[in-house]
Image (tube, rainbow, N blue to C red; front, side, top):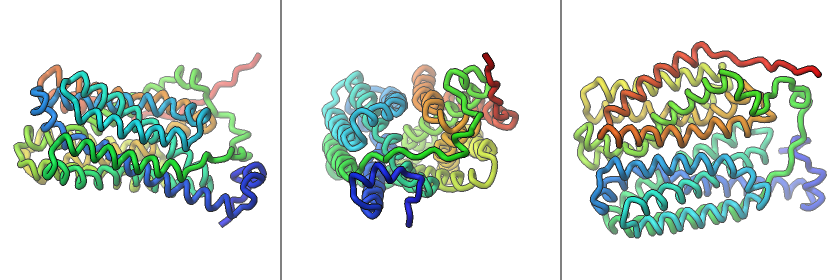
Length: 413
């Protein structure tokens, strides 16, 4: 396989000595990214810990679940600045620091004695560590393989999704045999080691040469220009809504099963595995589909799936099959939307400023999750949040059916 001219080998090969060393470097970076992403994805097992932490701290489950909303907001904020950290310190150092911070956050969570400490350790610190590693390592790996962006994105995103599935069994076993405190310690140590090892295998991707199509692109919006367009805020509303539905349900899935659907602990906990598989399926299926049809139509399909899932939770009798089907629809929609959205933003506002434009919209990842938890806490249960999400999903679906890409109006002096 040839690197061709998509990566500036002239500069990089002068240091490494040959094209074969470039191949070896980028394969090692891919392996390291997959390892790190798998560990970073483990945060989506959080619903396994809500009940135990609620008992330990003697507070309602909704108050504990709010920590996942804080985690998601912190993750989004950290993701938006991780690129600048990479520019200054390099992907290896930043990834290693993220791994150490993740392990430390989980270790401190094991000693949590009050709700404030839980929000700081399991919310802000854990979210910052996860967000710092997630988008940065994935985008760096994709830049190493410019001729296979879709495949590499699927591998990295798939590893992140599989992390919640793999750690579901690890953490469930630890909780059953070792208790809450020990589980956090082992989880933190294992995740930290995996992220650090992954970081050691990574190197920063060299600059890519702009293609002729990119050079002649006259439809690139700056962030200021994009934010003056109604389409920008329409896309932001859709993204926030999908994140609210996905992250809220993922964060409290086990508790929804036990308290809302009146299922046993074992059946409710299995929702974590269902969510992980549906999340991964959404990323792969909708990601591939987005190369075959308009991406906004793919988002419409994702919104319809999530709307169906919430409708089942609200209006259907709750049993194991309906519960699993509902959370699977919501997780499928969330995973697929997260995968498609960066490219969708570039379709609307151009490729060259995609990272900056998507970075602003990506804040909806954290805000959406936080809003879901706030509504549940304020109104004392799941139902109010489900109705809010149902309404926002219906609105977002209508937006996705009427929205059209804006045209850049060239300014003349």
